[in-house]
Amino acid sequence: MTPALVQKLRCPRCRSDSPLESTFTALNREEIESGALTCTACREEYAIEEGIADLLGSHSAVVRGERAVYRGSKIQVEDRLRSLDPAARDLELRRIAFMEHTGEQFRLTSSLNLQGVLDRVSPRPGQWLIELGAGSGWLTARWAALGLHCVAVDISADLKLDLSPLVMSREGVFFDRLMADMTNLPIRTGAMDWVFVSASLHHAASLSDSLREAARVLAPEGTLVVIDQAAEETPGLHERSFTYLQWRRALRSAGVRPEFMFPAYYQAILSGTASLPVASRRFAWLAQVAWRSRLRGLLLSRPVQTAARVLLGLNVCMMARKTGDS
Image (cartoon, rainbow, N blue to C red; front, side):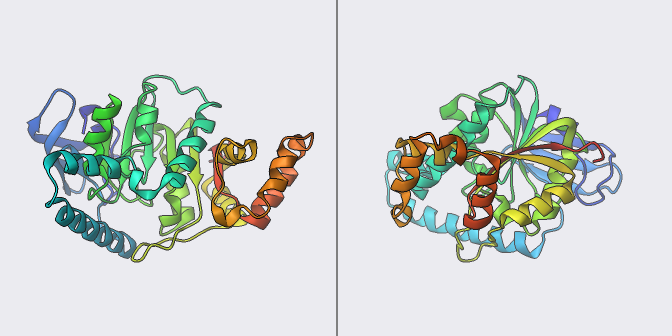
């Protein structure tokens, strides 16, 4: 954790704007490696270990359940890695850190959709960005490479934030790390220029609460970027797919005005540069023919895209900004 980030934090317990005091037992050139944060209002103390600050506060049932799943997964991975030589262990941990163990489709979908967003925005070096549900920060690193001060947030360090050093080392970047609940972010109001969420909001205990928190921590001219996909129903994890209309209601409740985009992953499929999952190939050729014809403009029109989201449940890819009254 960097000292600069401490100035942007607030206590997740009392939620006051009173500053947090930091003490450290180990400090390197970039961050506080170990120590504690203390709220000057309620005196609650939060630990910093291996550069990760634990600002979860009180744990909800959803958070407790998911943390137990991630802890169990880490134990299983550690048991398997014991039989490998050091080089093979390092390679496997890097595969997990960069989500290569999840299969090509997830990585490709997330990477292409993020690139589609980055092609349309112009983040300025020095701006602050927080990624919610960042895991190891493998996508946070993409923003950090643009010169932003980035904060990777997740509810767990197990096989997630604790693998961030592997990501930072390979990508040649640095970003802060926090354990926090996306429904109760330990960030001061208006402290972030960007909030980024990729494939995480379907884990949220409350979509509306999470989006309201994301909007709260945004600066008045800040931007919320969301890339999400259908839940996979992983045993033990809280996952829920939301309809387009549920997204619209939650965004309205959060006080942000969204701009939905046609995901770059779908564009790659229609143009033939990415393959479609086997289960979805039956009618894909029809869409690809239309995409290569004069009908492309119709497919990209707002009415057609809205209808497709309502009827087909397309993945969410959007940017949103605060409305005037938020």
